[in-house]
Length: 249
Image 1 (tube, rainbow, N blue to C red):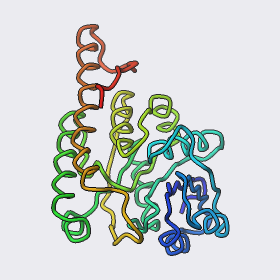
Image 2: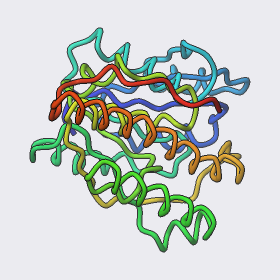
Image 3: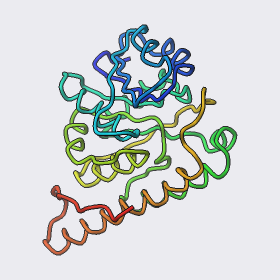
Image 4: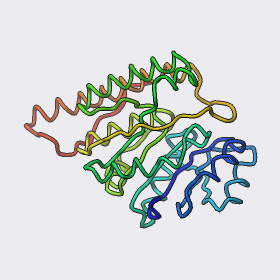
């Protein structure tokens, strides 16, 4: 595992999963646990295992945790930022393969989970929503994004420096915000097949939140269409754009 990589684990009451996950993390990898207000022993377990621990800024929600981690990352001299869920569904030993993809012309790489395993572990409704929103974003951004709700992500330093200032998502819309800002800034996104395992502990991702993914996808595509229109009118072909506000949720 590349020792110049910082691994983010966003947490909220994940003591059970964290106990099992931390021993699997490759030696030499710096681990940052960004916590959204746990009331269990998440902090004790993280610090006892030698992880850096931060309480997230900007508010509640996964998006706030990711933005907090990116801010921390940019204050150091790490070359790569990796992110996986802390609920044990991800295998951290697979991150090397995603980082290798960064060396193949990509600035952002996401994991693509096996559809049959998603059905087995998450259900057909979850796969349907993921496939639908992944297809929508693939068409909108002209990049192959087979698993937009993936829990595996890796970023080059350039990618974090480029997209962090534009991020505003606070919750589970963070993946769409990342893809939107990557597209807006002309970054190339790749993917790599990955493993998915049964989670440990209680899921925070309800059926309502899964259904809301469609709304998240459509609102960011709306922003993209506005930018495309502005670029067409101005004759621009790809320089950065200040974007536009999201429609009211």
